[in-house]
Length: 273
Ligand SMILES: [Cu+2]
Image 1 (cartoon, rainbow, N blue to C red):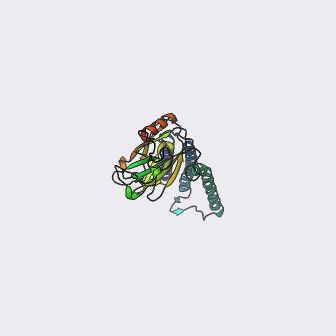
Image 2 (cartoon, rainbow, N blue to C red; image 1 turned 90 degrees about the vertical axis):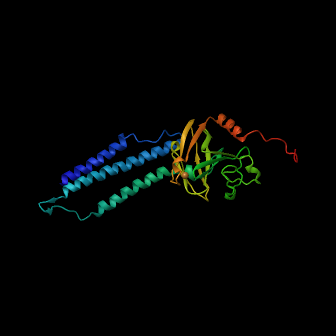
Image 3 (cartoon, rainbow, N blue to C red; image 1 turned 60 degrees about the vertical axis):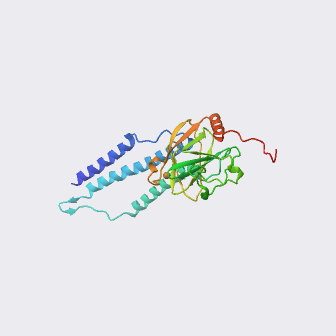
């Protein structure tokens, strides 16, 4: 009986390992340096925990056989061993601390460090069930907003009409267009409930929380059209809260931005020619 149980445990262990190594589950191609570093960190973590998993399950099977009941009695048993227990805790602690130290650099770059030089600021406001995407316009300044002014058609993010820096703001929906090779700083906001802004090709997933503005940095390198999804169940329409990340050549980005800004409003101010 004990033998069969051990063999079953080993078979389940082996098939789990095969699923992970041969299963072909993987994320789409990474398109930023940070995303590739996150992948490397993920692979390292998976390898460390994978080795621990195989060792633990292998030993479990062995112990089931070694300490099994024989002729109605427990033939062998162990009362615990302080050396093994303390040693195990030290080994596990060392592995986890090492993984955390290795992983914190890329995490801090994405979330904690200041805005990189020349970064393009873009504000993302999640709502049920869409992403509002706001560019600051030629002046580089976002107009101030107020939830009291939310109007789905005319003013989706509630820009204050008397704030001059909001006049040239560009607001689009669900398509985030960014230039390749330039750092971008997103400011994540939410109108109603918690959403989660997920760009799989950048390995970025961040909650958008009402009442907070959460910064997030990335630099996409490869031109293309990629998926954006809401990764937090946010209501009945959650499934259709999808967007597109358009990474374009910098020159195309500039012309796209000019197009969005509409006909030039550079007519001289009558009061101040
Ligand atoms: Cu959502």
